[in-house]
Length: 198
Image (cartoon, rainbow, N blue to C red; front, side, top):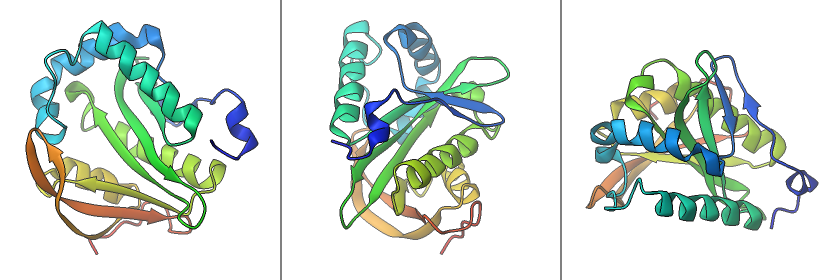
């Protein structure tokens, strides 16, 4: 459980210039399934292998249940990213593996629909979640991992102030294959938008 009193209240939306972030709701299913479905070829190389029922309503209900359980246990917070100008669901971002005590850290993972890429939406979302993690959750360190060939994700992280710290060999099983990942991190007192390749 989160020890902070903040987590006894409803999670507020996080607002930026281009995006609004809020927790996923059950009635987001159709829009989520549509943007994920139309972006499948764009997303699959960078995600765990999609299951045959990936976009089914039953799988969605399980996903929402897991989001709520993780939030209640204080281990993760999932947000959906909405483009402000259109109000459309553009993607998702999760702050997971949240640890307090001596670690005070979390891990960011994200995805964006293909038609929303290249607009700076994800960079802003990563910055918003980073601020939330540092200012509200009082975390000290946020990590993110990305496949070395994922140039778009690397740009997002570096623009959002993350620094490359090394290579994690055979780190995550992505699209059915164990893949190396670059480890990126941002510390609470790092200047925003000052990422380097390290």
